Length: 180
Image (tube, rainbow, N blue to C red; front, side):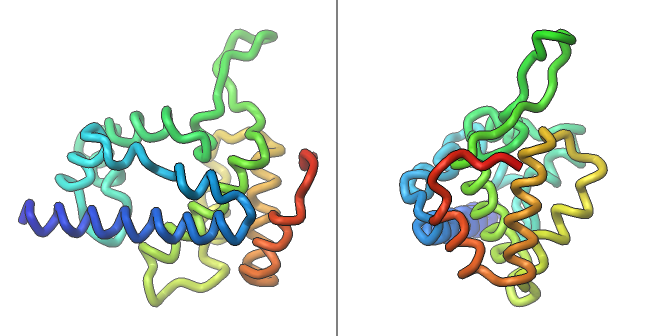
């Protein structure tokens, strides 16, 4: 079983990473694609990925269900700036930990990541509305800075309504900071 999980997990993360790379190249952010999710090959993330591999969802979910949290996810989100969870800091005014605005390039990489993850996990059940639907289902529970959430939702809505070409073209054409 462990051998099957090893190759299943390795295949899944390689497929996902390559799909994100293709998306990032289409979006005009090739460096983000080349650097995407390299931490998944570290022992802290890869070993739990093998242990909790299922093939139809993130192994972090199974680890979280068993242990109450995911060590692999804690490691991953702290090293990958395309996750909104990375972007938290203490607010000088309140002294509380709060979400902060993500730079555009990481919002674009997050978009590419979400589209690729939907395709990898949903396989033949994927359509261009799926990433937006997933985003909207979790929206009430998510702690994400407001403009970051709006920018990501805008891109996912563009994908859902007009398709990948329109979404990637929009990202490629962005030259200055995007304020929503």
